[in-house]
Image 1: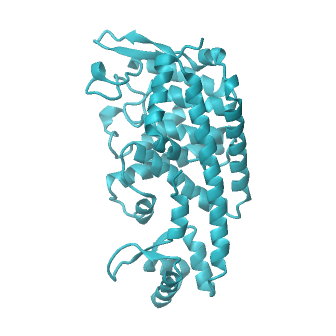
Image 2 (image 1 turned 60 degrees about the vertical axis):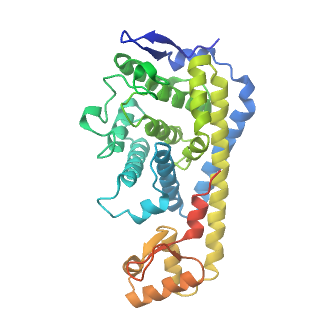
Image 3 (image 1 turned 90 degrees about the vertical axis):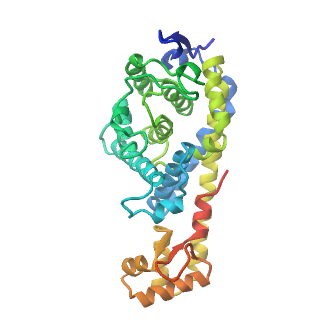
Length: 372
């Protein structure tokens, strides 16, 4: 029978969980009952990769999908920022902490993908540490004593007021480096199918909890990095945090069930269903956005209106001044075409008053922000 690990006396009045290596777990794992889930997830990812490659300008949409993942992953940790708020505050230096945390997630994801795709660092513990340093830059949990960018050198715990009352106590700090070394070896040597391997890697990372803060976000960021590293996706277009946020309680319960009952199959099944559901939603969203653009092209007339429409698929939130600058037109012309777009229900004003008006391409954002 597959064995997730064991409880170890810390010598400090509480027990920690010491996970077995994924190499050991993989050898004992029987996933024959998950054939359908494995097939569905693999096919859904293949279709997601294909549809993104067919878009005329995929980078514009991929950027929004990456932002969606950043916002959702941060919301799981308690931030309240929405995509619209982040987009409307892109150029503000002293943005509120929630927005900074989302931006950091974006930066960490972009850095990690760039390293993998451009022959920088491979998917490795070093890459994850570098991503963590970016993630925790100047935000909560990024204090120097919490060693951002480094594996922890003290005990952490989840739930409760101390390790003795905690819901879960990860392995002792003196075993983290060895566990993460085994983790890295499994990334490149594990024999399981990629979607199963990813489910195991995410579980193991959350179980080791190698950082003092930010483990959840790095664990979710790992999903995107792995998919791109294995060329399953060419860009980070799978925002699995949407599924994990909706099923947050079940997510944590299943991670606990693996540690306490060795129930890997239920965890893997849950993870694969998430991949399938979210992939299908993103495919559907992509098709709807393409259809929306084709529909709106028919109702805009002048060259400037066509230019503004193209701009909205890049910047779905904007001001009159931004329209004026980006299109190289007068303020009066910018006012006129924006007002025309409001009349055509393409744009809505999101703030009150007559000065510094902010506008939103709501139809587009509604599609991007749709729930499961």
